[in-house]
Each structure stands twice: as structure tokens, then as C-alpha cells.
Image (cartoon, rainbow, N blue to C red):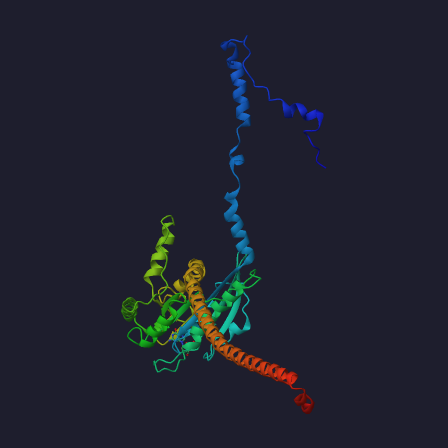
Amino acid sequence: MFRNLKADPKFSCCQEKEPAKRTRPSNMTDRQTRPNAASRKLELSKLEEEKPSEDDEFIGFATLPDQVHRKAVKRGFEFSFMVVGETGLGKSTLINSLFLTDLYKDRKFPTHILDNAEQTTDIERKQLEIEEKGVKVRLSVVDTPGFSEALNGDESWKPIIDYVDRQFEQYYQAESGVNRKNIQDSRVHCCLYFISPYGHGLKPIDIFMMKKLHHKVNIIPLIAKSDTLTPKEKARLKSKILDQIEENQLDIYKFPECDSDEDEEFKEQDKELKAAIPFAVVGSNTVVEVAGKKVRGRMYQWGIVEVENPAHCDFVKLRQMLISTHMQDLKDITSDIHYENYRAEHLEAQMKHSTRERTKLKRESMMNLGKLEDTDNLIAQKDAEIQRMQEMLAKMQAQLQTSPRTAVNGT
Ligand code: GDP
């Protein structure tokens, strides 16, 4: 229990008396009050002792990055990308090439990833977990059925758009739920869009499809099967595609500006990545031998195209940006821009729906109100009728009282 200090005589002096002010004694000279050199030295050394060390001055928030890092590593990372494009452009083959490389030497592959590529007839989501230096990444690869080349209104492209929307919807539901911990993020962070090497740039279906996708997902355009093109043709096609992207205002993924404090090597790498868009890729499910070394490649009479040789195609650049340099940025853009777009649209649609529902209800209740009014009118009519009858009855009773015969006859 707390004691009442005021009531305690031991403390009464502290409560009532004002603390004594320290004043200089009148018999002391100014000189006497000034410290001599020895005492000044002593005072200084005391002060030195009391002065906080550099470590004492830290509150501790400098360790925040470490805390965030530790927590993120513990939680692991999730990343999803999807491949989109016409049938037969090598989408499934490229997925296999991306994950069957020796990038992750100790990695165990799930059997379904090892399967030979077959033509995709439905949307397939494949997951694999990769670990490097204790950092875990759960990768989801979404293989989509190729759509037909012609814009013939068959809507074969629709399941792809629906899939992206569904992932947003699932995330939205999870986020709005009671338990918002451990939300599985299956949103599509990036879309590898395959462009045919045989055409003269983007086809109308590509432009149509990219327009359907560009505000929902980060599009990274790829020139498929680039081993079928000469370097000159490749360069011409790249430039044509970039022009078409601009002309048609297609909002493909924009690589962020490189920070000025990054080292020169990184800056150079970043420049090369940006210059390679659209990435010209080659995929292969076969391993061939080049100078005694087993590599993933495509064998022709005229030679071997190596998937992972930067001189042959942009496969390594693509993998590098996806996995080691731009994964977080792709996730951030998905979260901050595409998902926010979805949420805004969703909320607007929800509001419109509620307004429509309210109007409908109001209309219905008005109609019911009309019905009620009818009933009220009916009841009022009945009441009036009853009252008329009661009055008639009262009159009759009064008449009966004045002529007892009638009353006798009446019984
Ligand atoms: P998808 O329908 O887009 O998934 O295409 P697939 O991955 O099933 O590949 C269709 C065909 O193209 C297969 O015969 C592959 O071997 C072949 N193919 C895949 N990638 C390449 C490539 O980079 N170059 C060449 N020349 N052929 C490829």
C-alpha cells in the first residue's frame, strides 16, 4: 500500500519548507570562489569521466536494417511470374530452362518441373522453393495456354486476365479478413510476354493482349526462339518492337533508375540490361556437350546455340534481372501500383453495386409502401363500413326501445 507522505511526520519538512537556495557565503572573496588550477584539472577529469562514450549516445535504431533483414530472411520471400504468348513460342521450354540450370547446384527439383514440356491447355501453377545462403525464395511459375493468333473473338485470352484478377481478389479477401498474418501472396509479380520471331514485330493480338494486361502486371517482353534470327534481324526486330510499344502506349515494366551511389560494375550491368529489352531468348530441354562441358542448348548442323551464353542470347540477362537484381522492385510495383489499381477499381465497383442495391431496395420499399397504402385504405373503408353499421344498429335499437311490440315480434 502507498503511504500518505504528507501525513507522515518524517516527510512533513520536505513538504512544507521551501528548499534552501544555495548562495555564496558573504565572507568569501571572488578569488576564493574561483577554482585554482589543480582543482580545475580535477573538475575537468571528472567531466571527462562523466562525458558519455560514442556508444552511449546511440539510442539503438541504427540496428533497424539488421532487424528488418533478419525478419525478412526468417519469413522467406515469395515471387510469382507468368508466361504469356501465342501457342508454340517456347513458353514451357523456357520455364524449364530457367529452373533446370545449374544455378542452384544443391537444389532438389520437384518431379513436375522435371517433366518434359507439353503443350499447355490450362493455366498451370508450378511452385518450387530455392535456397541460397540461408535465404529462401518460394517461386511460383504460371504457365498459360497459348492463345490463337487471330483476334477472332474466341476469348481464349480471357482465362489469363481472369487468373491475374483472381489472385488480386484472393489477396484482397485475405487482407480484409480477421487473420491478416501469414497471407499467401499469389499475386503475379511479372509477366514474360513472348513475341514471335517470325512476324515483323508485334501482332494485333499482342497489342490487344498487352493492353489488357499492362495495368495489372509488370510486362517484360521477350523475343521467343531468337536462335532463328540473325544478329541483324534480331536488332531490327528489337527496335521495331520498342517503336510499337511507344506508338501504342503500352505500359511495359520500366526499369528503375540506378542509384548514383551504386558501384560502376552494377551501373554497367544495369545499362546492359536496359539496352537488351526486349530480351531475345532461347530455350531448350536438352543438354549438349560443348568443349567437354555439358550445357543447355540447341544443336544445328551449323553449330550449337547455348542457352546460357550471353553472346548467343539474352537468357542470362533475363534470369539475372528476375532473380538477382529486380525481384524486389517487381514486387513493389505489383503491390504499390497494380494492386492499388485493382483495389481502387474493386472499391468503386463495390460502391456502385451498393448504390444500385440501395436504389433497388428504395424502389421496392416504395412499391411496398404503395401496397401498404392500399391496405390502409382498405382497412379505413372497412372501419367506415363498421361504424356505419354500428350507427345503424344503434338507431335500430333506439327504435326498438320506443315500440315494444316490434321488439316482442322481433324476438
Ligand atoms: P509453348 O506452347 O509456348 O509452351 O511452346 P513449347 O515450349 O511447348 O515449345 C514448342 C516447340 O518449340 C517445341 O518443339 C520446342 O522444342 C520448340 N522450342 C522451344 N523453345 C525454342 C527455342 O528457343 N528455339 C527453337 N528453335 N525452338 C524452340
